[in-house]
Image 1 (cartoon, one colour):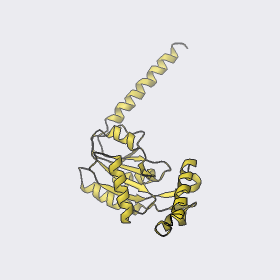
Image 2: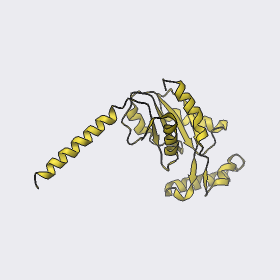
Image 3: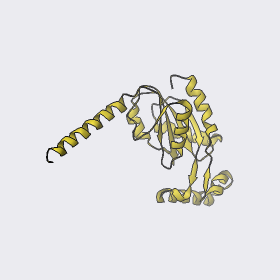
Image 4: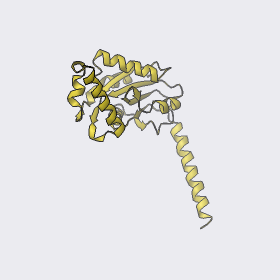
Length: 196
């Protein structure tokens, strides 16, 4: 029995190393996602189905030689998994898909998303697409609930109810703006552009 355990440990270590090497040698295009509550993952999986590309979480991503699509939830100005993704992307071109609750069709929202993208991805020069996500207040972490409560309080205190009508109407509830149709421009772009 004493000899069995080291042999098992060595075998497992060897399999783990082989798995990592395989992960690092991926050559095909892929979709990578960073998701906290599952909406960005949902979009990534649907995009993967439409394009016939592999879908991996940012935690499992080990790099790629071909351009990738990074679908990431945008939370309080930060993209989920951005730091990990940047460490592993190693200069490969990528398309960014921002997934958030605010309507990206509004010019002010779109500018804010672009500003956050430029701040998070310093040397990035790829295309940006935006999709609307979902929220279920019951599933939010305590920290995120407090942040949403603080945002609501600030809006009311500053008298900004008119421009934040949608936020206030959905506060505390469950709402989804998810739609596969929002992926159509990304699919069309990805199929036409080998560079991204």
